[in-house]
Figure 1: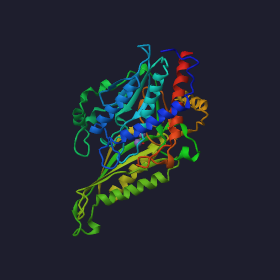
Figure 2: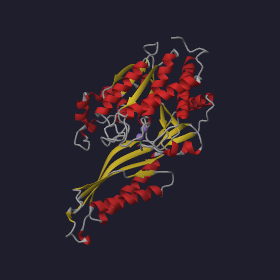
Figure 3: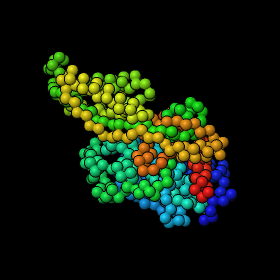
Figure 4: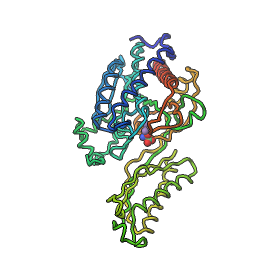
Length: 428
Ligand code: HGY
Ligand code: MN
Ligand code: MN
């Protein structure tokens, strides 16, 4: 390996960028076939498809000259070693799990672009003053076990042992699913990283919203990631016969949850700073056409650009829930399932990405992220930065999720330029 010298220009040759970007898109398609749903993409934490995805992605990491391993909670790792065995670590990556009926790029493309950067650094014999560690997080979406950022929180030593008892919709606990996957559940603490070894965490991700398209830009540099809280809210009344129970004598939990869902929508709509709140799931029991639902549970996902606005919105939602429960003579149960504070991206990493964009004659519009990302959890142990790629139509968490090939080429070029500029900065 030769030290970074003039021939290591921060600019990647266009044909190299194009060929490696093309390969990352081909690999997104390959990974999208590792799905647990017919006719669509769905790969959840600790599924057989997750195991196969880690296996396939690890082979691509090895081809890129990396050592590979899987950690104690199922995150996949690849390392392009520094010549200095005691070097610190720069982590680049994203997540390999998906929502149900997902697109092919959310998370996945970020991991595969990180592998391409490592492959290029290896091919171009870029000498690294740090270990370049690529991570494929095991669970960012949090759709199997209600809680989320499981893999990244484990790195930050924030894996909650209570999670091991959470059951999925089939009644399988996380503990059992980890055992079936070949993990030792109680070893989760070993996945935690030593933050003194970390230089930073970079994540490339599709924007999943309309902003970059609205300014006709391929890339953007993320300033902050919205704070999020999730809860499961249950109202319990009285199950009863749909034909014989007069309307004025009912304690209908489903009607109560319906009223609360609309109240949640109105409270978020009338909030002032772009707050959002979503009820994505409703589960009525016993769930028969001719039975008044005794207990109904709805999911709540609420987000805001700062923690004060989020607290204000959630307080209003909680008091509305209490009011509806009282008026309808229902019992309210509120279970928090996830909380991630709003996170500011590191200024120096933002500047590095902006300089790299400039090297590549790219604008670098700054924007906040409404979507949550693993970077939120990693921010607890090192500086984080995110590079966004335009989402045509702002569509995501949907099969129509797309990227523009040339935008991916630009993202790879900027990511590679960032790496070379960062190496030069550390060597200077
Ligand atoms: O829900 C989110 O914001 C992310 O896509 N998991
Ligand atoms: Mn994502
Ligand atoms: Mn997502």
